[in-house]
Picture 1 (tube, one colour):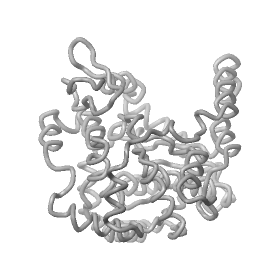
Picture 2 (cartoon, helix red, strand yellow):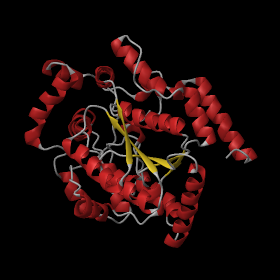
Picture 3 (cartoon, rainbow, N blue to C red):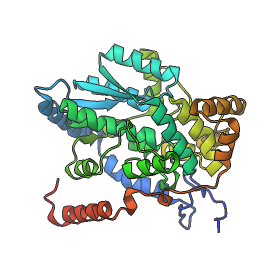
Length: 377
């Protein structure tokens, strides 16, 4: 039975998350968890700066004799663009990685070029095989799970791992940060690093095996998790990161252009998160992003409620953009509508690493050893 509708009294998370829990005061587990974790991220700025400077010196020392000290991802979005500026200010030599999955907006491409040219950062663009990637995206839509962005996310991490090995770079600096992305709903999307899940969905709905798509091998994934190599640094968590101020800096100094909602630098992400996900599953990812900003004090709850009340997607763009997406994916409008109307499924309905006993038991053993012996870094 579905739960009666309820919305958190502190943030704006609600029962569209099927696993949400409220306390007696109507406060949800998401923002309660955010504030508990915030204690770790709320060290005095001086201490965070000291820790960051130590990390920077470590990266520079490890990078001696190589072309680069670290890897950064660039998408043309706010977080990754601001991160690129800070990395250069700290005197690091980054290699920027961009994954072109065929859906970049013109604004995103322009943002990347203007920023990296101004900062004199080398760019490596990974262009996915469009025919196969289109089939993979379509397979995920046919799988009818809320995870259709997983292929792009997986390709980005795989590209980081590949660049790390190729250029002997031990550090990946991520624009993911607690103050603007600290709330995540598991049921709304999972399996980002799960190559078994991706391959199983592709084979189920195409009858083929992936040939060109950069899948992270299970052994490599486990080794990276256990050994923390390449090590991921969430640099924005060491700074006083304010998203609105970051936007102003990017626009005023670098000619950066705003593209709308979070992750809307990708045309597919914009349509998927803005229309397909709310329309088919009732999931509006703006709730996570806005609730995080409320928790971090960058937005009031009233402002978040006003914003979530606006349409998730411009009504006048739904019809032409649906036609565009269906055509680009290579299906008729009738077939696309049938996919959207198909019964909803979940991540656990397909073969994945979580229900692969070797992977699951291996991680359980690693966690046990790490807790008991304390000698695994």
